[in-house]
Image: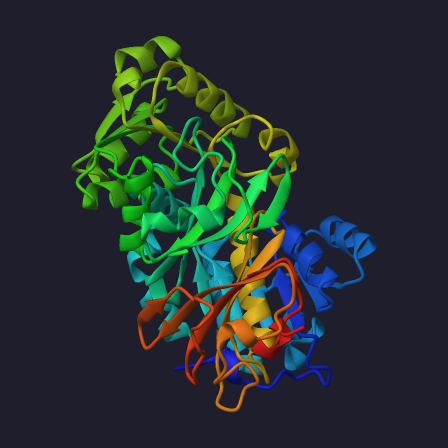
Length: 466
């Protein structure tokens, strides 16, 4: 199968990739800003000449006006020297055609955004048949992340590592919790194989060590196997029971995908949707979900439909402002697990100070996934990075390294390695067995090592050494 991560880039400078971005909407513009800042050579394609002019005058990138799937337009954009095509236009079909054309013309890697629920069950087949490297469905990805969080309502965020065998889980420490006032070294009596990774307090991030002391209100991140995460939460009194029911306001694509996920989890779902015709369509597609025609922003209707008794509440209207207000209302009048979806990243400085608990920024999730793929593609050449995640709101990275025979980190106890500061060896994946590292553990060839650090730019596992 086509594997773009194993090919040499066409540019002589291996730290730069030649990338074409078709579609300069909100996501396209964020990608241009992020990838150009990372030093890649970017060319944008859009049918609107004013959009192309705005992007090229704002960033040091090239621009072509036209249809991204056109042979002549792609040639003008430099497809013959392209390493990666990213198609994020408003049309799913155009995105697929852009990538398919690019892959055949240049044998380059390609990423397409595809949002239509009609294609949801066929994405793997489409990707393989068209030779596309990655297909992203933002609404489906968001729904799946929400479903993961509803399995463990005490968590604010969950990131999977080692093919799902380990999780980095963030939670907020409640008042009078058993951890309050304790240091990391004083928690060993919990007798659970897990590791404290980071503590966020008043806007500051601390990589945890033995002296780190916990306070009520801290956002704490731990890494462990899913089973041990569950045991840890239970032992310190954090809710571990997945929700029994969910109220969703708005019948968007994300709401449809989420309801499907929750139906498979045997969770009772209720959707409140204003548009009567759309209600009928959803009711036919979601046979186990109760779809009601009504204005979910009507507080009287929310009360009548049992907001106070619901286990989880998720506002998925088309307006960020309405989602935020509904979240604040639900926090006041229910004890539900609430997840707020916000599209616009420019609201983040405000929402970070509003105590909304779990917030998912869909634009960020899309651009983060693409940027992670680009970084993995860039680093895979002469590097041993398997995966890379930006965590703690981009203030730290979690990297998964493949340990090679002969590496300087091999065959020595971890306590003897001269590690850089602000760095944590979080997890070892040894042939599927998850090991939480201790000082006496020794790294072996073929291990996968997960490192959490505030440093950036690591390309080799030996970069962790001082």
